[in-house]
Length: 132
Image 1: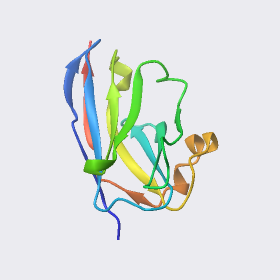
Image 2 (image 1 turned 90 degrees about the vertical axis):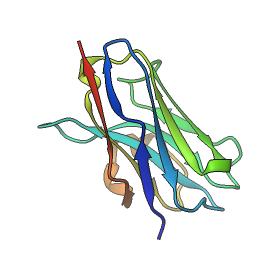
Image 3 (image 1 turned 90 degrees about the horizontal axis):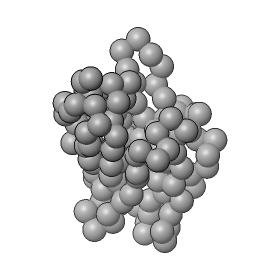
């Protein structure tokens, strides 16, 4: 079964940057959707970004939640089976556990940003802490 492993979290000051990585144990031949989500203590899990992956995907579509648009960038490196999330201009309210998740066999649609339950496989998460 496919597994996902996040890395790259840490502690930074406001305005700083981090690059998170989500490595897939195997790279799919067909289209799948990888989502980045986050959850802060006492808050609901929320979507951050989506990226299509798969050898037949081509460039792949990506989508962003409004709250991170222009600050975060999602991209992938097929050679190392990894989807990255570049976090720039970090704010204290970005502090959360960040997870990547996989929606097997699906294109990414903007509606997936509001439906984390569509993602069946989840990593363990990586903590991002932003101080003011």
